[in-house]
Length: 198
Image (cartoon, rainbow, N blue to C red; front, side, top):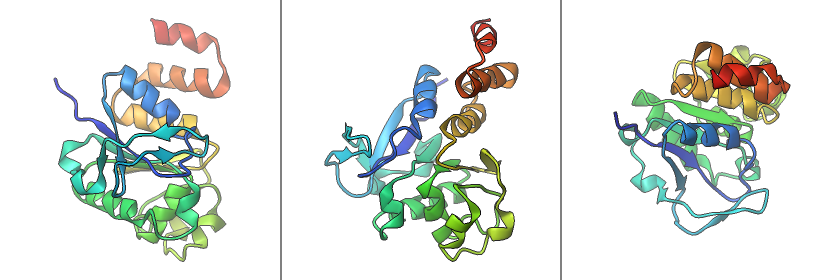
């Protein structure tokens, strides 16, 4: 069976550590990871100083051609509207029944787009999202990561929990192996390695 690729949004100041667990283990599970920029194929520079060459732009991104859209955090989510087109892309994905995963600042972008008003979600802290003026404050929960329907959210300190939700959703790991993967990478539980290797 041919799998649809996973699309990773890339932009300057991207918090490169946030999607790393998810993309690495999705790639190991056979998913192609394609990078998508807003409107240019020029390289972007992450917060960690890595230069990333986008594969395509939002104009060429179609929800039906994707297994998932991942939106990492970035300083740019909080400094203007440069990344607002990614919030609109997330809306198109969710409307088409294709999952979206957002972490850190990207959750604020989704809040501004109104995508968290009716969905249970999390982020860094509740008042961070409240500052966007969104209407979903009653749906905010203090948790490492939350999946509600097609949308996964996580705060900036939870890239492993974020990946757990993504890997489970796309079937890279399931059940006991997903739990073992999480325990290994989140809790440094060496005994979990044996479960993964079985």
